[in-house]
Length: 251
Image (tube, rainbow, N blue to C red; front, side, top):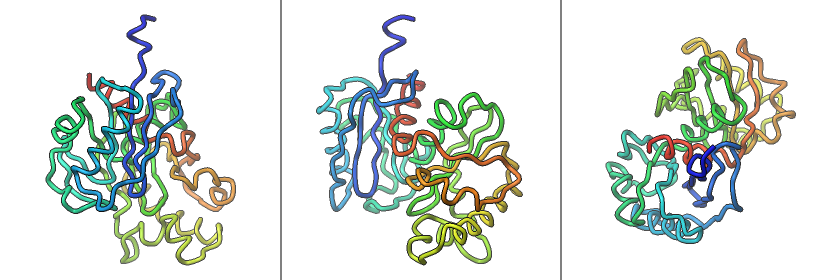
């Protein structure tokens, strides 16, 4: 394998509270250095966030193309929604903004999509060539749908209406915390959610991610689906790894 083939990628994960980034070993699926985290500026305007992204890149002296997650629908580089960030993002050409502010080429993608790609290529669904649904359970429910390893972007399956409610308001980890649900009670909520998704998509594998995946032994036994369901393997690093992978593949 040539030196060029082994060159790391770089991923940045933009969240509502922190912006995290690191170089990534694209073959091993792990960070190639300790990640840097800088608090997300408030308000999280496009210019302010892009400036922090530039600081992360400068910290590692990274001069090449990089991948960047964003907590919103990102359609061909254009931000269509805004969650936990300033509404001024809507309609912004994120690719152009990042390039003008940082001086590097960027690929900006939905955060759940990036995590899904990482889990499919290098994590819990590695080498699985069927239909894979990756969900991130946190403040909301993020989703990534892959078939044959290829991403179907911006699925937003956390916003399905179930029993008259937006699904993530009832079944996200934030709902468990807000309502003081036991692991068994939350498992029943997740079962209702996943069974609804199963009836629509018939996936071959479900990967449950997000920070709570670290505690999968407590709640996953209470989730009953016909589809095999496994906890995510890459945990909080999935977004950074997936963003780096997608940027590298984009050339």
